[in-house]
Image 1: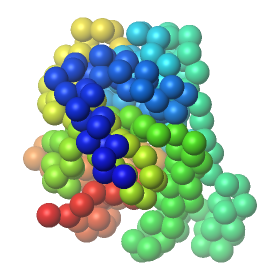
Image 2 (image 1 turned 30 degrees about the vertical axis):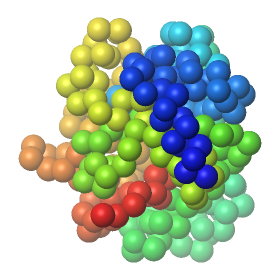
Image 3 (image 1 turned 180 degrees about the vertical axis):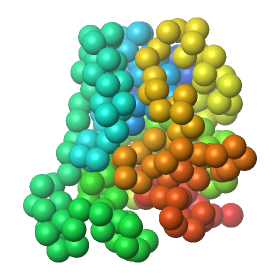
Length: 236
């Protein structure tokens, strides 16, 4: 289905992010969604969608292990824009079975156990969130990790059978922060305390100066395994 992604690339070529989002919302009415985890990048795109009344459904994956600061930004975002952020929870039976068998912190035991937790708390809910949709908007940027530099701003996601568009893929972190300041967008205070990438509370720590952007995610694992599986990428 790569022809669909090629079609999308042509449709939005040369457009600024808001106009590209508006174009895609018209191309995929009722079948376009944006996933947010309330980080810097996602707050930028949420602002673009909500402040321009774009008909794009905004959703988040409520893993049950988020930071208090993340819940604050979630609630503040809904207050400011007066629009819903739809939540998708993991299947409670799968969570109960995993925790009953291995305990609440099994993800520290091995890469396999961590990936099992990610699959239950994030990947399965994501697939439900994407079901019935044709276009998935994300906050991915190229400089976030080495793997993501090999991606494109428009892709075909074979796993989820959907077109993905990354509106601020080429933006630098300084550009993201400047946009947030200029538009007075609420953001996660953990960013000011050394957390460039914010996920589940037990699996995220602050990053030290000079460390990789995603060094704070699953820091007890090998650096090459810093993705949870939500965004599969081709290796070059």
